[in-house]
Amino acid sequence: TAALPPSADPPTAQAGAGGRSRAWQGAKPVPLAIAVGLGLLVRFALPVPAGLSTQAWSTLALFVSTVAGIVVAPLPPPGVALCALAVGLLTGTLTFAEGVAAFTDEVLWLVFLAFFFTRGFAKTGLGDRIALSIVKAVGHTTLGLAYGLNAAEGLLAAGMPSSAARAAGVFYPLVVSTAKASGSDPKQG
Image (cartoon, rainbow, N blue to C red):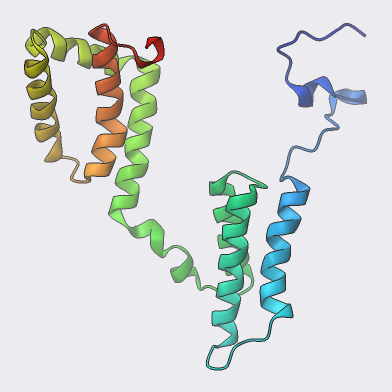
């Protein structure tokens, strides 16, 4: 067989007969066993304290398993959270309304969409174009640049009320692009 280039992805490098990959591409088994084992230990091996319902104890076990899963990382954190949600719903520990209650919060969606904006700014170069426009308009001095960025954030605040979403999703890529356009690249020192 021909040698694979050094940039070849290891799972595809181990392809067997018929082009199927032999490498496991799912959850990491040992961290998964640790996370699930801790949850099962809490739920079934420890006695339910007096005054707590079985459902409350099951919720604690699910929480312990979720936190352990995020720490030992058998999957990325969103995958662990979605698996925990699915287990909670399938076991009846959570009702559907309780399980999806967090997804109805507007701030969550604002932050989520802001990160989509960030990816869009980076992929399309829109952040660079806006930053160059700001530098061209008010970038004669660093004080003018700071005022320009603050004015732009003030205008955007009316349409995006979450300051976390605005800062992380929109202004971080703009400020990085503005710094690079001004000749200051953090990666270059």
